[in-house]
View 1 (cartoon, helix red, strand yellow):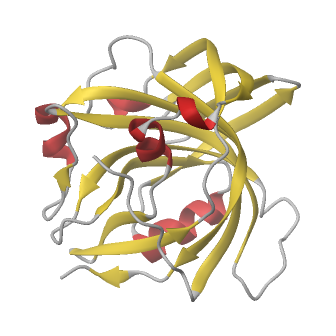
View 2 (tube, rainbow, N blue to C red):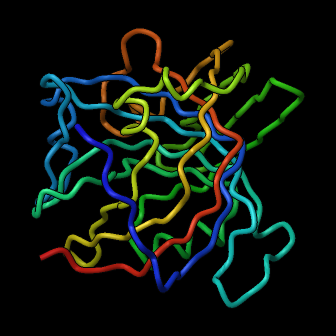
Length: 239
């Protein structure tokens, strides 16, 4: 398992800031994840297991590259549930089981344009010093599914302590989705994450079971980051 090379996004359809990011990851048996993937994608395995990540964060300055950010509409909490896959050409990327967002227009655009599994949710992100509390509860599909997470962010990881898996789980530059029955990829450019230690103080969630996965066993592998600026590329058919 290697982190993919950085994608070059010359023409962006969206620019975003991802802030106050927390990465929670659990390992799952491959057979529990594989049936949830579309044709053409295979789980990217690590010792016959595959990682599933729950990532809450703040979306900020969300906009097309030719427009300025719009107050309220361009800033909102988001949380995604994802796994790590290989495409038909062997390229590494991520596949989203769900993406929860607090702005209905953003949900509608993402679902209509890229068929991404966005869910409109009542969400909050409260930050105070090193503490962040994330909350979410879906309005539908299924109603009430959500999470509550309290995290204490710590010091920056020394570079020497970060291994291959730390980079792999946080450094992905391609997503896959299915549009009109065809597998599509979208490249995402962002600089390397500045990763910090983090401690989970409280976690309740049923997003994994809502996606068709068993509840995870044990505590997650945790990272956090102040954030990055991203450029989202144009969708391309995967052949």
